Length: 66
Image 1 (cartoon, rainbow, N blue to C red):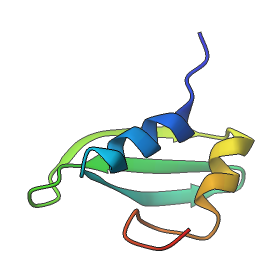
Image 2: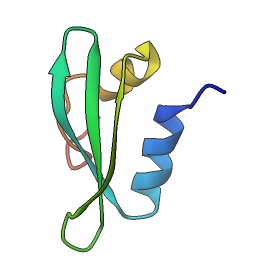
Image 3: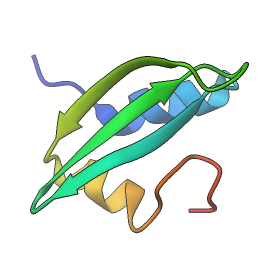
């Protein structure tokens, strides 16, 4: 089953939580999912999905405009 990481990040943001890019290597990115009440890391994932890379662009966190 393929995971839609763009949809995951959009839902995460819509719920008031944050995400942060913690690593970029070649054609993959590692993203940390952070709580809305202080930024504690809840989960993280690494993906090379072109749709995710396009969604993130040069942003490093959900606090930056897309």
